[in-house]
Length: 103
Image (tube, rainbow, N blue to C red):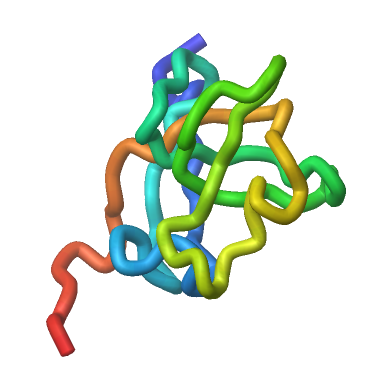
């Protein structure tokens, strides 16, 4: 297996992770591997298995992870659905937009 098999791309939709991750940002995520508190991860929504979410790991919770958005006013996260059991990987770098313009 080549290195490409362990990476995927993620497009941020919505404001739940602002200001660190903004709507429309494109990131590369490394699948598998270790997850630590503070990591921004790609996870499976526990109530909607067809939906992948991007959140920050706050703590281990039972057999899963307590995850929250950086923008609590607009984030559907563990505060409403509890811990997530399935973390697919962690976001490692933003590739688009390459430069952000400050408003």
